[in-house]
Length: 447
Image (cartoon, rainbow, N blue to C red; front, side, top):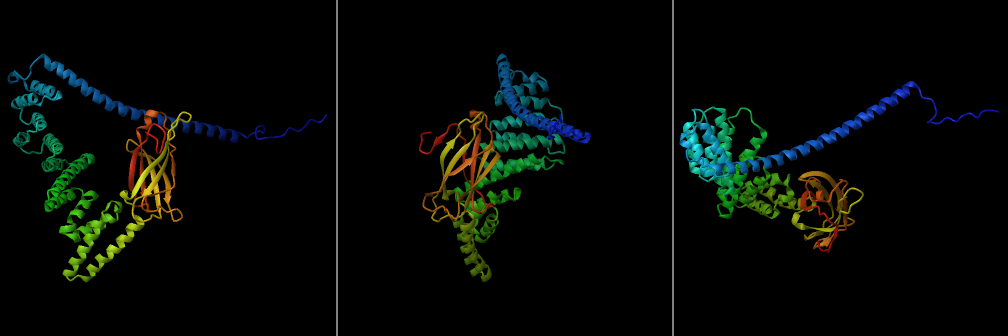
């Protein structure tokens, strides 16, 4: 009897030693890679949880410290006999009262600490100035700071930087923006004495200065003092030369008093944020600039300004989407549980409320979590075949499905969707932002 020849397959054929070794090493390598990925994911998750717990613990610790301080203070009136106590005791008592926000008694304690402090000890001055500022006793706080002569002592520079930031923050919180700006500038003056600077602190101080001067300028405009507003905005511009909001405010204000300077600001903004520009003001500034150039016998410049009006109109029609020209309609939202996750699905419509048709429009739908962008879905809203007609006509339904896996219904509320529309990808306009709901709904349903 002839034995049938056994058919060879990929499962029963013999492998060489090199093939076996290669398969072995490949298996080990894949196992190591999988372990690295899982370990990295778990480490990142653990780190995020740790950071959350740290902030939670700090808040809990502050509440606990306040409760303990209240209990200790209730047992005795520490502010009575401080004249007899040592420097360290006065400082501890001051800290106790400051913890429970009793700034008056904290002030008494720190004043006593200053009387007993050794020469070159600056901390009690800093603490006293801080509680005076908390009570809005700005002149007294400034007097305390003036008592300490400027030196090259690093601790003194550090304390003065901090206290002027605190003073600026307090002025800002009560609406005294100009005084706040000047305090922030003093903080910047002292911080500039450090040889090594923290970029975060440096930027934070400058942002505070710019914010305070910008707020001051806004008040000046409302009061009709445009020249003062320009002066304060120019100061802000010195600290942040690339701040587009400051440049835009200058462009608007100068459109009457100095149209040509206004145009120079608008031209820079046209390349960066054309979707945020008021083209009515821009074109008026161009017309006024053309008239001024004619009167100054500069015909070439006048011709340029008039040509610019025409080119700007074309640019806007082809490239720019205005937020107020588009209405966003949430047609449907679906967040029903699928297996173990809640997939986010939405249907949007857009209405063109402007006076001209839109032949080219795209949208970016961005899923965000606590301000961080996670996922973007891009869709075509309108094109030549399906234009978005003017006077309130609605687009076709645009369905959006995000891939992000969300595991609990409660977590849904932490996510938002930002909607950017654009004719040109370089110039995206934020049309709207909505929180992800935790229930499905359709347009017209009661929510």
